[in-house]
Length: 509
Image (tube, rainbow, N blue to C red; front, side, top):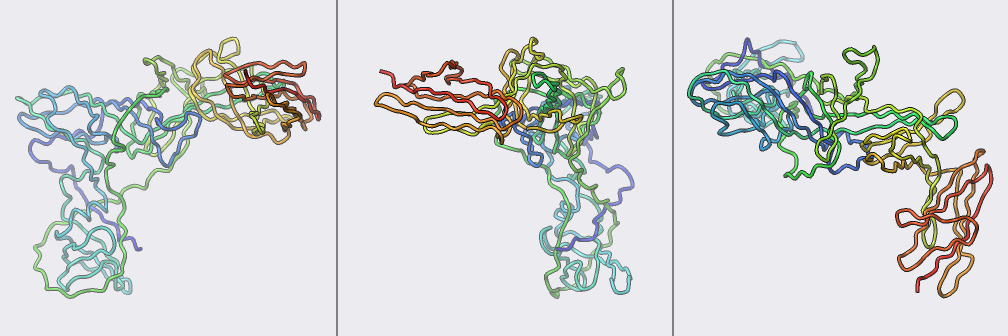
């Protein structure tokens, strides 16, 4: 594969549009509300290469509407816009038709749209560096070899020791350099209209990220919550009023809309020239189109200051109600950049009561793996008492004078008053075994043994499952609790020690 030399279109000024065509180059102000991907678990990380959330974008624009029928072109909308969701208010006679222009001005789309039309070939001989120009007609699509017809016959561009550049006399009027929504309207008189444009667009997502720093006593922690919003759209929204929506919205559609085309042009030199009659092509003026800028890479952008706040103080979002949902409003305008991420602070709590323990699921015939976990209640008495949107959690513990990562997990959406359980990784120094030590026609006797190889005491919890036709009876002095349909055994295990529970599963009469 060889890349064709740059395709360009030199425009000396603004494009000349036909009568009745009005162009709005961009919004005067914009608001972006980002909704989480509906099919992604809240405690799972976003897929940055395939963002499946969406955003509600509201723009304010001022346009000059001519008398009679007119086409209004809103440039700079989101590339992932759902045209059927667009709501336009403020037009004198409403909207008759709307359409997302799916072709963007680019080397690839320009080449494809100029099929069968005359162009100019600027040809550089790689052996002598001599440059010449000749007229030609494009005779192939943008995939594969670039076949052109010149006075010498059919040729393949960039073959035979030549480096070719294609120059175009004009750009098709319906090709835009930016994603564009066009609408048809009609006004009895010419007037200035202030228009509100709202629409949904895919290719956005957001999530909460939590950092838990355990205190040396192992019973309290400092909790920081950050909201990370991401956009894979090619349009940036500068100084946007930004909000994040937590909760699950039932939304049905036919999938992602048509993303506007465009992009680079890659052609291969693999064909032999074929003779053809010469063409008598009329001369035409030549224009050039600058190559599009490279795509922006994903990058973390942290908002660290706000108006009337100390330098480096984090921007803290403001929580509001939105029906059964929660809305987190960023108090200062931020730029939702194309193909980028941004972080803002959700919450910061100190001295949160946090119980650290190990848990295992116990079922008939064996046990599951032992998992580390943290548990608290989302109440002011425990140091929390605020809605917690789901997201990944990183846990750090003190190790000498440093804080070391001790585990990663996730939390689902938790309302005020809910239990909060953060499941971490599998334990490596705490194990549990279940052994059947007796049985008869109506029961089984099980001994559950927990071993702690750590040099510090640990708290252990076993969740014992039994079918609806059985009950669990503890045979030792340790009592069993009950939670969420499971029998719960909780115990302390000393450093480098073990402890056991013997219980019986009895079939109900």
